[in-house]
Image 1 (cartoon, rainbow, N blue to C red):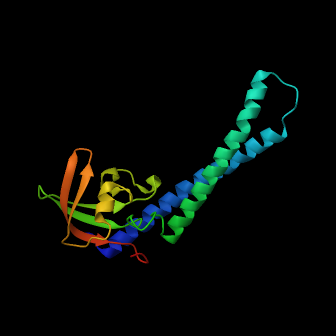
Image 2: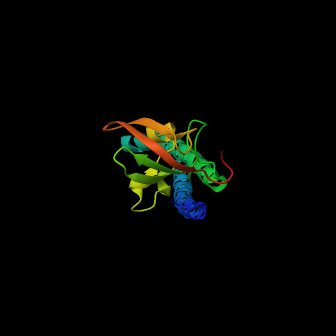
Length: 169
């Protein structure tokens, strides 16, 4: 069984790693945006068809970069506030779930809203908050039985424990 202290430490380490990766991506996006803006500013009216094609792509590329900057900025804010999960039908980011399956095996998994939060070697213990498994767990408590659809068919499991991050319900 994972203790609350272990779960909090794991979440804070994973969150810090995710924020660091997202901040690196954000810096690269800002550099790319600057390059695109400079490309727009330095366009001349004389050129060949290749120049014209590039000129048409620049605004589209700039729009995509701006959208991604907004997404990454939002993700960083959510991670820092501990609110990276989506709506009320999703598990809060960092929620630890322990399940006992019909074959008797027990697994502890962590809800991960952002893929960058998944630590190397722990991909099999991460669940996305909006996945069928995670949605089956929402609103449940220890002792409840859940059923969800997996790629291999319907799965039943007993909820052994659910530990949400501090400040979420």
